[in-house]
Image (cartoon, rainbow over all chains, first blue to last red; front, top):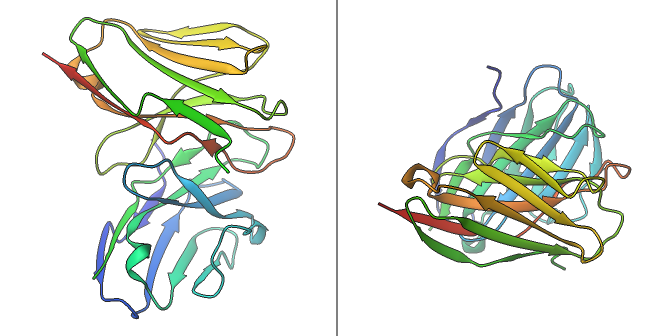
Length: 114
Length: 113
């Protein structure tokens, strides 16, 4: 069964350092999402891609966060510099098309900023 | 602004009992309402979903009840099992917008033996 892949699964970094997360969506899925999930909360959208284009990044803190999906397949989310408040689970999800119903999540990257 | 409100925050049910989680929304443009199940250290997985043209959908032990006029929907887990212990998220989506799901804050369910 096809799955959304994410790496690393866990990351510990010191504040002010740079950190990057990688996501490989299910093959053929044009829509890709990055969510942030704070412990005890629901996922909150950071950025949505349709192929290589950003559809919605209104909740992405652009002073420190960046995301790219250069070839419309895999994607990278970067934080620079990391802050203590960035400690969270970063989830990637994909859908076949932006109007499709079923959205599949990856296992997430647990980030701890010390 | 939280577009989907979920309650309770946590729930303890005995094995064999019924677990009920409730959600409410305001945006009448939402037309797809999924429930996700998340185990510790894992990403959320789609459990069951409903569209507002039906009032109930059942899959195995899981049932969604939908009340369009009240803008509320709920998840019922019948014959709850310890393996159902997880966090459950409701969500809502406007399929015409193409934008992302709006999630509730989650309910942590513990089913005791």
